[in-house]
Amino acid sequence: MPVNYSIAMRSNPQDPDQPKKAYARAQIRGELSLKQLSRRIASQTTVSRADVSAVLISAVENMLEGLREGDQIDLGELGKFRLQLTSEGTATAEEFTANHITGVNIQFVPGEELKGLFTNITFNLVPTRAAAKAVLKAEKAGETMVDLSKPTDENEEEEEEVTNPDDGGSPGTV
Image 1 (spheres, one colour):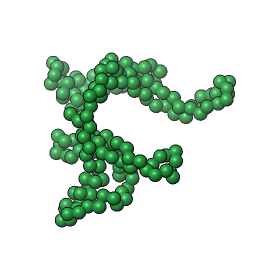
Image 2: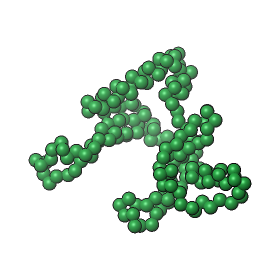
Image 3: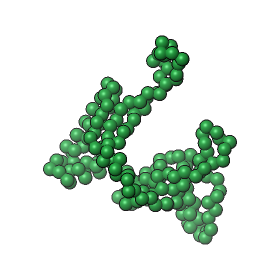
Image 4: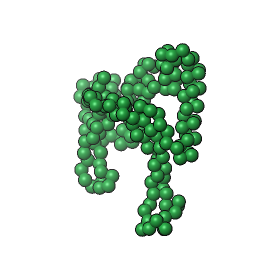
């Protein structure tokens, strides 16, 4: 199944005076909730959905605790989670203190099987959410032409909007 993408014009944050360039943006088809994931797992095993949910919730809680304690969490073929620090540099190690640490991120390193998942991936160009919204608005107004070159609210493109196709919603983007 191909991955849907749209094209977004973005400026260089390090040099906003440069002209914008076109970049790919993955389009999210939907979201697999904990309830839906539990249901899928339960249907493939002899474990109830409630038990699967309890195990998944406990797994997440234990992963968070392990990360807080400085552990790397290895989930086999899925991959590994570990903490990554961002900090301000100092001229010498003696000058460095914990006050120079500016943030903590979670780094994900995909497992070999997950890396291989993207080997033969194909891509399908689809309209941006803003373009689809403009076309729908024009269609409702009885218009046959849409000017997609009009400026749009950049925050609209940045918002994460995911709808569940199972609920009759339409795909969104990230």
